[in-house]
Image (cartoon, rainbow, N blue to C red; front, side, top):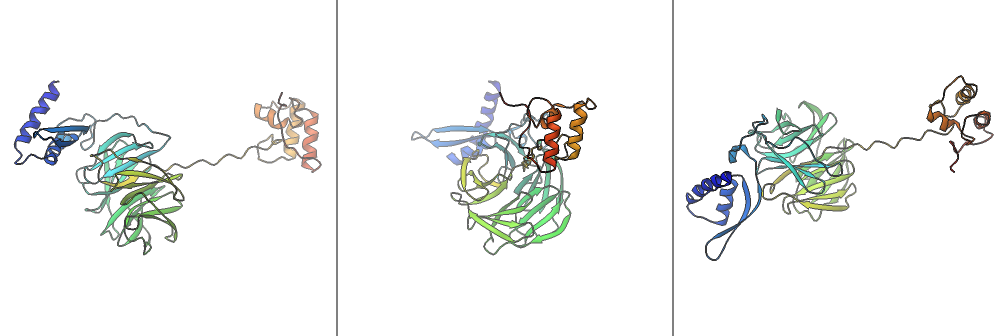
Length: 375
């Protein structure tokens, strides 16, 4: 109660100093104290304020952070996810990173470091963030807790920087005038670049799955897919987005953030619209980039063939020898070997299994199943 009362007195003093009090100036005054909302003037001259959120911004609100992060915020250290997907949006106006779950729930925010005030793109690998700064032509790196780590200069032509992506040991940046350039994670240019297609002349973001590069264009509202070597593969439209500002993929879906609609749209890899959600407003009303940690789906393991007792992915004479050793007691079988070696399906490994294995090896029969029979 004392905290709210004290803050109310400070805000009133600020408002009385305004030459003209309007809904817009009232909202700006509240924002300077870390409160976001929408003001509406009533007929009697009074104002109604709908508060939508609070900003934990040390520089503006006067709150102190105890996490040792001069430019960051004192938020819980745990990270929640929805269906394994984390989406990060960097905002050009509030100079913050916004962390969303796949269903659009805002999980936390981080403030960018003081020098990183013209953000235009974000990339992450799940352990670090790289934020592109359009004005000073640098890339700023943060750890997963939002703490600034280091930065590097871009040494390639960069008059109109528009996006950044990372995968493996590489970072790619896209520039409207010059094309796409690949750097190492430490900022060394890899002598690898290509020009954008003539139809893709208003790039606003780039992403990769390690095999292809996708560049979103705000003028034609399309996503252009390139090979890593720079050959145009195909493209698809991003309607209902009308001013796409960023793009990301996790290898299973493609997300596009739109500045006009203040939404993130999810597409299939071929461009089918799958869904959308709104950004946190007004704090995240000027999105400048979008990223998600790329998840590699592990390949489905090849099942071990029945009869492969020694586990070399083939049924051969060595399996028959092990079967005979198990039968005479020279080898103690594992549970897996008991299942794979019971090709007669009578609940044990015996001479009938050895005979079937030998017949399979010479082509007289085919083993199609193993293990004890289903009751």
